[in-house]
Image (cartoon, rainbow, N blue to C red; front, side, top):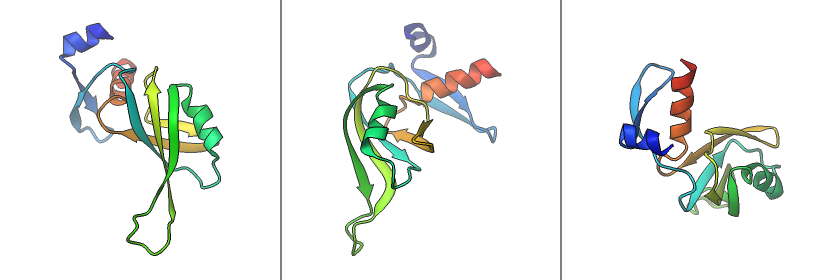
Amino acid sequence: MNAVLQETKGQLEFRHDNGEISQVLTEIAGMGTKKIRIANLSPDVKENEIRASMSKYGEVKSTRDEMWTSAYKYKVYNAICIVEMKFKLHLPSHISIAGNDAQISMTGSLRLIIDAMRQDTSS
């Protein structure tokens, strides 16, 4: 992994399905604690199911449901869970959690290096 970072100076090209090419910043997983957003979860997914799925990728520090803004009259769950965790493995952009195809997003580009490398090796 260090060799890839040195050779590419921390950047890789990512080819989207539509042919567009983006520059992706890369770094090594395991560097501290990050907050991630997990979307497309049904309301009946329990915290322990989320923790069990995410613990494969590192130590889960906390989880919480994201709610619509307080500008609305009632607090409403928006099907997004915020997970704070310390990584030990790269996290893919989609994982299965309790039968849901969950979409993962986070600040920075930690998860994108593995997606870009997979695409390069499959073509």
